[in-house]
Image (tube, helix red, strand yellow):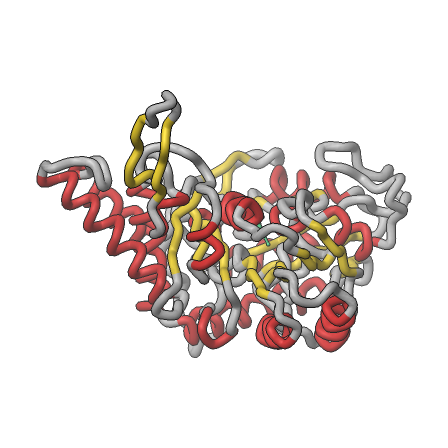
Length: 423
Ligand code: PMP
């Protein structure tokens, strides 16, 4: 389709892998939802800076100052990318998992948390020390909003409350009605954090427009390398909380008391939760990816991705044994993350065959969202597969699923090969 833009250059395009049938083929990376290949642009930016890096916030030397500037500029770039409000903070973390655990550690006393059972474990599990209400899987956007509204209406009024919701599912790729859920949360005096791990690589995220209080995402799914993530949003809860990690960088003043103990004054800025020497290359690579995506333009990227989604969905629809997993139905808006099972096939064997016979890398399993996959497969919790456990025998009901996922760097040939292979 001539109207659709070319894929963005990413690392690993020329990697060849051996086939079990003999010969070799270029690797088709179709597991973007786990980790997307880094953009060539990010690699080039990091390579240009790498010889000059130094300690952040800690040195008088030129390279230390250069690194401090890059680190703080990266914070501003991320704030712009997320369209943050003027008084929001951008905290650099290790990942989405780390960001959500940080927020969980910063909850005010007595905070009630509301979370759908359909969440990724990173957004489902960090709240277990708080009073959590797990909400049943909704089957439509409207049901999602109504379910949340009912739960919030039943909550004890006046105390602090937090809703945690994903922007795009890492299993079905379906978008969630974030703006409506945020409005419902705020109408009931609750706050909301958006898990944008799967949304931010595919869609523009505006904190101000969606009116979410916090947003979390990971660099390695946003075409940057591993090791860095972001928690951005309201500063009050973060400023009032104990530091996530105690140590240098988070502390403004430390002094011995006359009784021999130690008094600490913590920073109130994002540094409060960034103790230790910051990962300047990680922060810089996230900022570089944000800039590259913004320059490419999300309108163009979304159009290309929708074109690839249609190719995959049309191809899968031609195979009667394939069942695509969905909560909200065929018409739900979605990103390039599609999970399915194939009648008569063990999902793990199927994924292994895609790799061995076609050089295609997908994922099989429960995708760190066990309750959601169980609901989608209709499997019994007691017999449900677990990560690393053997799959159902051929002919038995699937306990695992297969997930194909792609994005800004995916060439047509990869999804065409995938569709041919499934067929
Ligand atoms: N949330 C969602 C929706 C995800 O897909 C993932 C990663 N699969 C995470 C959170 C956790 O991200 P990370 O592993 O980078 O912490």
